[in-house]
Image 1 (cartoon, protein in one colour):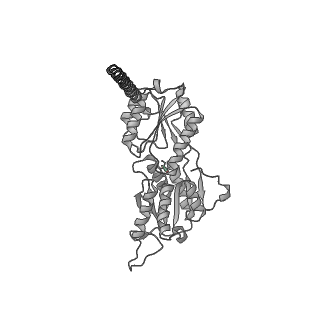
Image 2 (image 1 turned 90 degrees about the horizontal axis):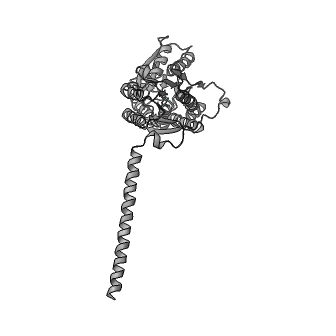
Image 3 (image 1 turned 135 degrees about the vertical axis):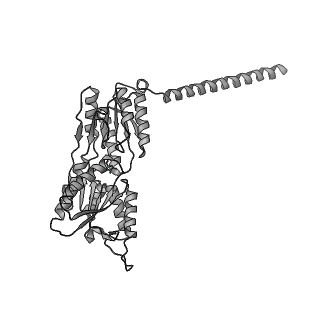
Length: 355
Ligand code: AHR
C-alpha cells in the first residue's frame, strides 16, 4: 500500500515538474520574440521584395485629412508597396520620433506631412546620412532643399488667390469697405501661410477689402464652432438687442474666409444652433477643401464658394516613390489638380467628392 502511494506521489511530482518546465520554456520564447519585435529591422520585417515606405501623417483633424491618408494607403496597396505608418496626433515631436524610427528600420523611402514649417533640419540630415530619400506631402518646410528629394501636394498660394479672385469678382459692383473675418488653420504651417499670402496678394489690389481679424481655428470643426459662438456672444447692439448680422468688435462682418471646410462647418453649426443663416443676410462665405458636406451646404444656400484642395495624393505619390527607388531624381515640386466650386455652378455636374 505504502509502495502504491509512493509511486503515485512520484508520478504527480513528475507531472508538476514537466508542467513547470514547459511553462518556463514558453515564457522564455515569448520574451525572446518580444525583444525581436522591438528591434525589427528592414531585413526581418520584409516578407518579400516589396518597397517599404515610412509614412508619418499629422493626424485626423478633418475629413480631408482622413481621405488623404486613405488615398495613400489605397495607392500603396495597388502598387504592392508596404507602409510603416505613424499618426502623430498633431504633434511635431511625434513626427520626429516616427521619422527616427523609420531610419532605424531602414525603410526605402520616408514620406511625411510636416505639421509646421520649421524644426526639421536635424532629422532630415539623419535620414540623408542613412541614405534614405524623403518626400514631403501636402505641406512644405523651411529647410535646406538638399535635405529632401521633393514635394507633392497642393498649391496653397494659388488656393488663396482663387478664394480672393472669387471675392473680388463677387464684390465688383460694391463700394464702401468690405470687412473680412478670417478663420485660419494651424499656426506656422506652410499651408496657412501660403493661403493667407495668396489671398492678400489679390485683395490688396483694392483698398475696400479689409481683413478686420484673423482667428486661429486649428483646422478643427470644434474650433470653428467656438469661433462662431464667440462672434455671436458679442453680437449684441448697444441697446441690448441681438442682430442677425454678425459683428466683430462692433464692425459688421461682410465676409468669412475660412481656411478649411471643417472650420466652416463648425462655424455653420454655431449659426444654425441660433437659427441664423449669415449668407441669407448677405455675408459672403468662402471655404477651402471641397468636402461633400461643404458642397451640400453650398447647394443648400449656406456657402458661396468652396476652393478645392485635392487630398488624393496616393497614386502620384507611389509613382514618385517608385521613381526614387529606381535611383531616378523626382521633380522638386509636383502639384495636384484643383478647381473651384461656386454657388453659380450647375451642381448636377459634380461627382460625389469621396470625402
Ligand atoms: O494641409 C491641408 C489642410 O489640412 C486642409 O485644408 C485641411 O482640411 C487639413 O486639415
